[in-house]
Amino acid sequence: MQETYDFKEEYIVEEINRKNAKKVLIQLPEGIKKEGFRISKHIEENCECEVYISGNSCWGGCDLSLEEAKNLAVDLLIHFGHAPFIKVDFPILYIELESKLDIIDMLQKSMKDIKEKKLGLVSSIQYIHKIEEVKKFLDDNGFETIIPEKRGFSHYNGHVVGCEYNSLKLIRNNVEAFLVLGNTFHSLGAALMINDKKVYLLDERNEKIELMDELRDKVTRQRFAMIEKVKGANKIGIIVDLKPGQKNVGFAKVLKKDLKEVGKDSMILLMNEVTPDKLMNFYDIDAFIETACPRIAIEDREKYEKPLISAREARVITGKISWEKLLEEGLIGFY
Image (tube, rainbow, N blue to C red; front, side, top):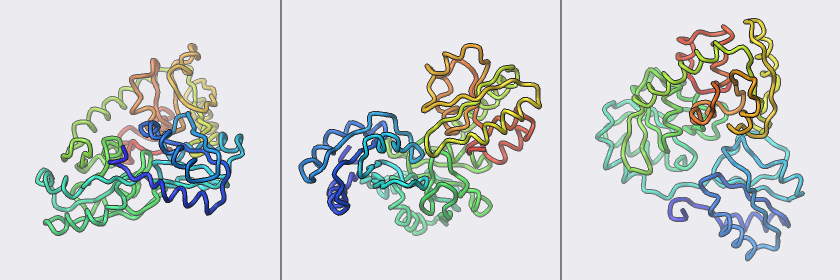
């Protein structure tokens, strides 16, 4: 893992000492938690402070361990793997985990698989520091590349997060296809948001170019089928996640009203995290709509016994939008 990502241990030590932090909380995403012991030991050996590791899940910059940090009265929350997502009144040090992999070498081996010449170029946070270098390489090799300006929750130009792909719409009419630097999670999100263009992934794990067409078509069919199931539901649970970057009680109240207008009963469920086990306890509910992360209904679809759709998809249920219009606007997004 150290060979793949830059954990910036020395920078962390410098910042802790500069801020004179005496108690810190470290928050790591799921795939990086195994680095917690090593990081905490390094900090303890180089700083005069107490170090705590959050054992709770961490799915994005929207999922900050603020309650833990406040309960422990720490001086600094160190959040790994994401860029700033929301404004909070708490000291946070973001470590974006820049990739050390040679992305240019990967491109050199696989760019022949990209058939289009006018490309929109976007990246997950791990490669955003190399996006200009990639653009120059592609332009020098016969491509015409555009990096979109940041929009919404994106922190940099060309930056995409799991729920934010609106920047792609800015340039969709000026490109023939999109290239995503990162992993399938981000390239699928881009493909579901822009369904009239080819989306390619530069796959960091397999070091090859992968086209998203087949996976996009499969997921789109699954989402249509899920929406149809929810149309037949009478009792619906509207889920509000209390994570700092996902909570929206106001929209849930509007959705409850809209569902009533189309003859459906509903109730609002408050949760700290949406899991299949928690929803199983509500056995009298026919289907669920989650107003939190729009990816929960897509990536975790098979884990849930009852139909689960996103708030964006729920607009089809309430008659606010047609399925065709939803596809045009994009399946990924909050509302």
